[in-house]
Amino acid sequence: MKTIGIGFIGAGDIANLHAEAINELQGAELIGLWNRTHGKGASKALVYGCKVYNSVEELLNDPKIDAVFVLTNMETHCEYTIQAAKAGKHVLVEKPAASSIDELERMNAAIQKAGVQCMPVHNYIYEPAIERARAMIENGKLGAITQFYMMYNIHHADEIRARYPGVIRQILTHHSYTMLYLAGVPKTVSCLMNTVDDTLAPQENVAMANIQMENGTLSHLCASFANDDHSGDPWTCMIKVIGTKGSTRYSYRDFVINDRNGAHSQTYQNYPESIKNTATHFIDRVVRLGEEPLSSIKDAITCQQIIEACELSVEKGIHVTLTKN
Image (cartoon, rainbow, N blue to C red; front, top):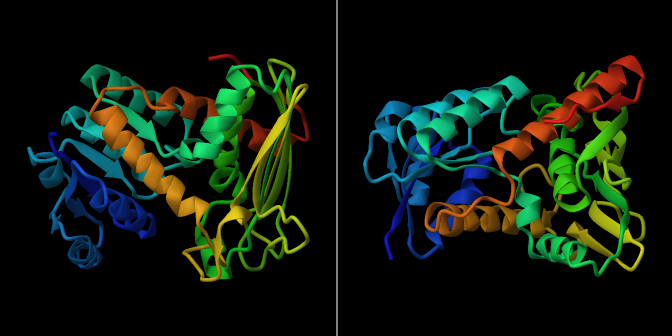
């Protein structure tokens, strides 16, 4: 089996989970990484057991690298994805995949021209429970889907909240691609938001969206950095699909370790596992076998339309009808 060589552009916290996945995966090797702060990159490279590059160009010119993981801040995703595509490298890009629809369309044009694969990190849909739900929907076991819910209530510390985008872009992006995967194509969007204690940060830290899909399904999306939910059967992170013949759900609370993990107050084990699942699928199925990812850049464009519709709905106080791609 050919070893797939991987390079990281960026070495922030999320790189730790991607590196762990690669180092545990037979037939994959993390060749090296570049980070904007060279010292931090060198430290991470020592932990991961790989080399550190002095520039993105040096990384992309390394013939040992078959694919790159773009793990930098959202504003640079477009630039690095296009650079990687021009270098003939397959790309896994963290979410949100870009800042705007225009950037996503430029990324899509570049990967199509280069003939490489680009897979956004839409990690929830690589969870076995979500793939099972999709299969149950497709084979009709749940009947006609009438409702889709996705809830997220995880308190984020002040310093984390201050440097993250608001929950619409940071969290409802997850909700949007999961809804797209399970409930269909959105038609209309209505959204409300709130900023609890704007002296800490001006970004919204609570948002809710109601969405009607083209097939008639109604969806409710909720996201909050302002609080944990400690009530019985908490809505920490929960997905529920209800149909005329059955229903299913997915919850972060099914596997919990009582230690902080990154932005989360506890280790919700489904989250790191979903990152590993995503990296494994990309390397083994997309790069090695040439399969299409479960979620593409075109899907990321639809998700960005949902996010921008949420923002417009909040700004104007209106229902927003989405235009078809």
